[in-house]
Image 1 (cartoon, one colour):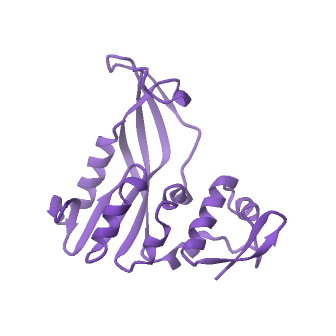
Image 2: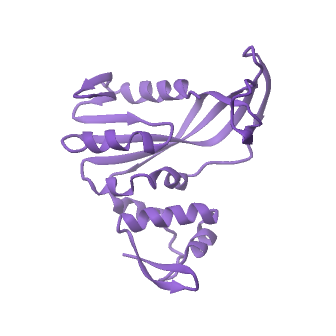
Length: 218
């Protein structure tokens, strides 16, 4: 699987403000260096980049940029790479989708050198009929991703910035199910959100309601 085009597009976007691309720094190569700011673009799982980010953030200001598909079109290619179909996905991405990846390193936001930028983009996702992909895609592989439009940028420089994602309608104490109802998130997404916010000390656990933890804003 590759997302090379999307990665390159974002790298060029963030380098346009006097940034240097693919700069060596110690044992690593940094996607974009803009003055004293190191910018890493990660289009995939955070599990593969968390050690690099922790190392760089010891002595440098680091920003991780992660794209989330707000709108997505799936383009199917046959084995020769010829387009056979294009359709719009009914799903729309949200900023809160970041918690699916943030579970791998929720405490890194407590480092004053680290910041996270979530970008909502419209994109095309190219599937190729090579028989090697996930069974969920009926063995079609994700061949590439291409950004069509960058819609929004959301910067989080500290754990406190994530408070704005909590709706004002939340009661003093709430469960993952209550959060899901108020935010219109799926239960699994609200659970990941609460896990991360708890690890960041943005919220705290305050007993239980049945089998579910009760939380309150710290």
